Image (tube, rainbow, N blue to C red; front, side, top):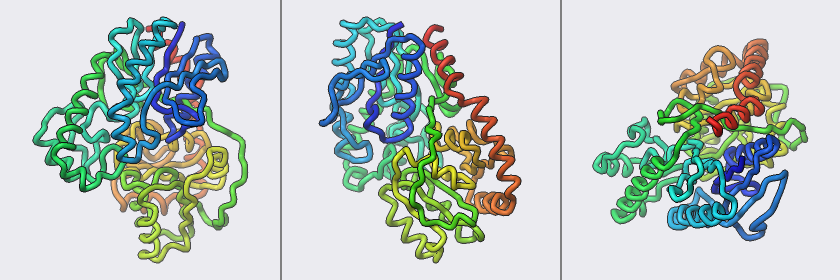
Length: 404
């Protein structure tokens, strides 16, 4: 079998767990005697073609390097899908692929001129929501909804477009809003050219779909990282981008009523200065430590010193890599009851699914005061990882789905 994996970003370019999972999948497929080609984006300093771990990597796509910047997103919209169509058709003429696998929603493109079977991993809401995130206080857009009047009303009330802040000079620009909606309709239409779908949760229902989680070859080696934090107290940890949709402010606010614990915030983003100011305003900065983003090699150490992992996200994140890692490292998890969090958090078993700041505070207090309960829930997290997230099991399911 010859497979072409299409992904906007691929290591060494990493913007999140998706790129790490893409690399793990490519390596796993190659080990199972599948000829693997990866079509991804080129950036200065990278080789346009190379082979690693029996993976043939073709870097010929055009896109913006930073998906959190407005102008880079404009570049993505203008160039990315056209370059996929051009380069995939050119490559297929030479290789004649059996499978084309779009590894993320943003990569889904009309490749109807290629006879290969086409699959897509639905790791986001780009093709199902004009705002690309199903998020506006509450979920107002139903997946696949087409309603221009509602679009205008809701999008002008939204703070975020996708994962980035929605700047006022774009929010109230009618030309931009019409263009954005038109682009959404194009993205929505691309879905019909996909034969089968891999979904990560139950938020979006699709034809010919199977739920298979992202692969994650988790680094187990613990390399110390200098963090000035009192390890004699319970350490609560949140890992991720410091953006409003991630809900870190909710966790900080709940922490003003917490005793005998410290909060470790790992990540960076546009809300960082606001979050630090919030800590000062609440007079709790002495028990909260910011580390900014850290190299992936130090992540195991972060988990090793953490007692509780919190996922306070506001938006319905399809599938959190942090959640997956927390189960691997045997940690109790407190997560908001949205998106794919319930895939790795079973309420009252390996953690808690919460709906508001009061519940978050209550569950934190319970776990801080009960070390044995933390250990018991951590053991349950390990069981969930072995039952649901083992890379070997997931890889087998993906290969079977390729052949189905």
